[in-house]
Image 1: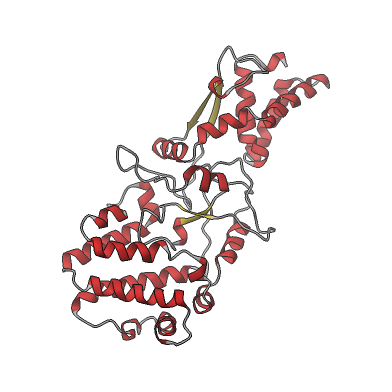
Image 2 (image 1 turned 90 degrees about the vertical axis):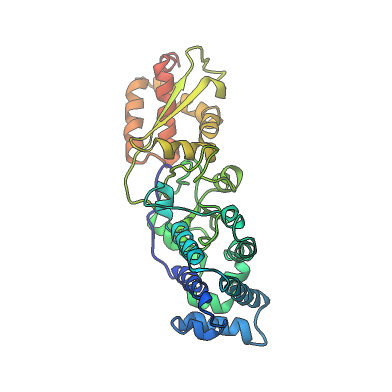
Amino acid sequence: MLFAYTYVPHQMEKMQEFIDFIFEVWCRAPIGTEFKLDLFDEKPELQAILSQFGFENNAPERGKKFYQEIKGIYELFAELKPPHIEQFKHWYQSNNNIECACSNTGGSQIARYADIQAHYPEINKLLESFFKNLYSADLLGLKALKDAIGELDNHYKVLMKANKFGKCPFCGINDMKGEHHNRREAYDHYLPKGLYPFNSINLRNLAPACHDCNSAYKHTKDLMYNEVGRRKAFYPYSTTAYTIKLTVNLREDTHIDQLEPEHIEVVLHSDGCNEEIEAWREVYGIDERYKAKCCSLDARVWLEEVRMMRDKGTDPLSWLSTIQQVADYAPFANSYFLKTAFLEGYKQVGILDEI
């Protein structure tokens, strides 16, 4: 991930607060209290919503299902022993501490549905249905909920107003719809909602991404695990600064008019973040995409700019130095971070002098 979002508090956080409280109620189930609305006295706003969904004649079907699933999970939790409840609490806390999950520190023991299935198949079935469908317009768009938690579209506007990069932080090359657009990009579930329970509505697990990053490359891939096991990943809302250095190396026999991906080596480095970089470049197909960009019309235009500067009597190396200054100021505008690395690669093999 080239850069992190600045996290912005929003009314939508209330939905996660509701889920946190619902989970607390589930964990109290083994004391033997029958499921009833009195269990939600401490959260009157949520209690009113559940009352409407569970008991009003004109309650929407999606609201009824929401209520019934909460009740069904409560009844299964009622059969658990204290050690099992503690295990679920630990899983819940770990899965919602996205920063610790990404850093793989602090005793983070994140749980996947597969982990729960191995020990609690009946509970897992209901948890999957509940959390996989929690992030959906048919639920979040219900008036009773929307009045309480606001709308994701508004969260997107507020987030983009505070993050004016204009580019996808996961690739740096695709534009993102911003505060002046009437449409928005999709949110990526960083810990995929198809793999991980408990955090499908946690805003710290939701990060807007371009279509290529979200759907074409990452999709349901797991940043937290590879074939070896747990690993570190960049945290989308990190407040710790880091810089990724990109180098584009070209083969010595590269011909200016016949550049192919196999002629290119993409080198990415950041002090102390090598494990995060490897997870990022694997899941988002970074090497493939940067190489493709270097073989695209955009890259041919970059070289044409060099020709034009030479024709006007400007030393290409002097011009490249100016371009680097622009890249230092705004690296992701017009793909300057990649453009400068690409031209530097040509310079290193001596081709820039031949243009």
